[in-house]
Image (cartoon, rainbow over all chains, first blue to last red; front, side, top):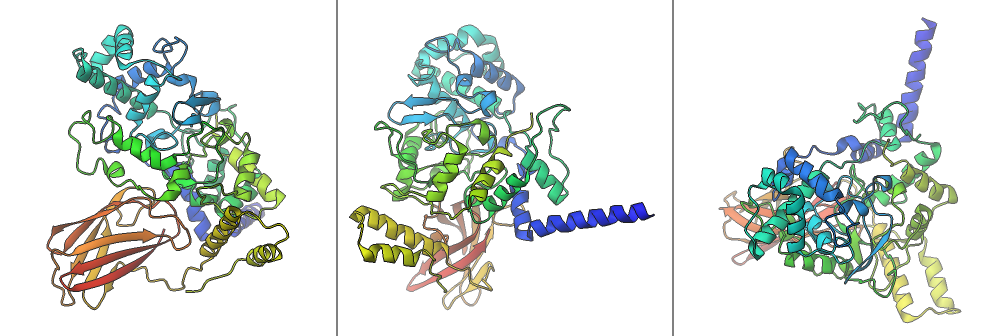
Length: 382
Length: 159
């Protein structure tokens, strides 16, 4: 009896301390950030990719994603810049012609995004997958070379998904090219972040059923430390991080000028202004000739994209923070080497020419350290 | 509306007034711009903000509804709004010009998309391309013109 009473008192005191730690408004924010809030993907999320859920397309896409034979140097594949050990981000800075030094972002959960590349210059996962194929710094193939190599290696797999290989010529080659992008995107929809120490903390605080997958016994299970809890308080409070890093991927699908300096004289500053110009000119965009049977609302992102705001010239996409610990260096151009440097960047809020949206923060050393602990607690269990 | 002056203002003024180390013009402009943004950020959200979805003016009545499964305005998701425009007597107003403006009073950035308004049936309009990319206080303004009548309607949202 006494033991039951003590247990009840313990539960009461624990729930009281949990509710004291977080206000109702904060608890709503925590719920929004929790990985269990990711909506289920459905075919209507991919209005221009009818094979997004086709297992055969996903299998073909996985092969195209990993096969280094499908490149000019015979050593490069999509997988070269999206590494599991780096949370499916890159480990190096690539010099992208006409853009400058760029860091390959994480594609874990990219299926929930609307815009791709740091400047959002493509409007679908499949049209994004096409760009590195032709990039001289990446796979470095022409569309015709890609068609020949893929046909030689994967004719049967391609035809099982898309039907006969299109006739030679520009139209057929472009159709083939677009279809292979759709297969790669179908595979990429399977790349999803797993729960982190932060998610387990939220589940405990809010008494939620644990999100799946549950890590196997012996897997890496980080602990949500008091330091991380301090950081979370700052993240949703005075740090204002949650203004842009919200939702279960801790990003908002939008573009912001955060005062990141160019990394070199080749670092093109066009930002989102140039990104949307390129997206509109992309023949593989939602309004292009390679999309059949689109519904009226399918191209809403492209049709209603903001243009003309000068601050967009310095704006780049808000990245997901899940697994951010694994994906240094940081920012679109890899300008900041560590998470500590990122926190310092936001605290000082240096505003370069052309404008920045961020404002200085007055954080203590403990709060800065807490933010770093919190960011590290976003790494998926594995 | 109350404006709060940030605690950083005096230090900036002292810095500028002393002129001991006068920064270049562009740096001063940046500092003043940053000061302006801090003041915007410290704007207080008015108490008892009217979050209702309908407004009655002298020339028109306007009501909106978000096209979402639960009827709530969603964050981070492209969606549309339905608008019902009526005259003071409740009759649908057809053929009006309805234009959109949206902003966050505590932030300096523009609305993240370019919504468009189209009339689908007499007095029933659709606003396509709505997307809210940040939580907080939003103010949406519809300017309505019909014949010689013009009126603005302002809606507040807390997301």
